[in-house]
Length: 65
Image 1 (tube, one colour):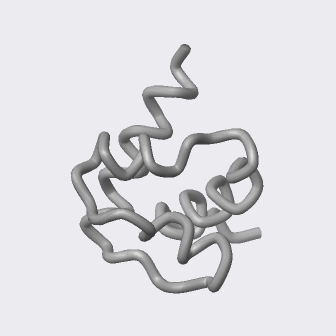
Image 2: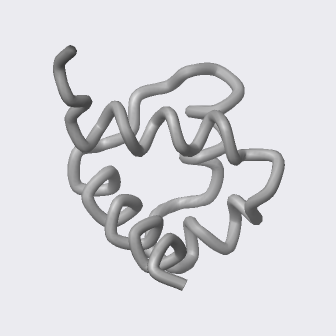
């Protein structure tokens, strides 16, 4: 079985935990415009690669706790 890449892991994590997180706070933390995460979760809109990397770092900080 192939290991998922960073994009797939971030997108899967967002979809499975979107009901638990404050999406606006995530967007403020990585300095992106409002609604990017919500549009991805609700309408499956693609997230920019740079934003994926920042989200991955943020999610890793949560997992370290």
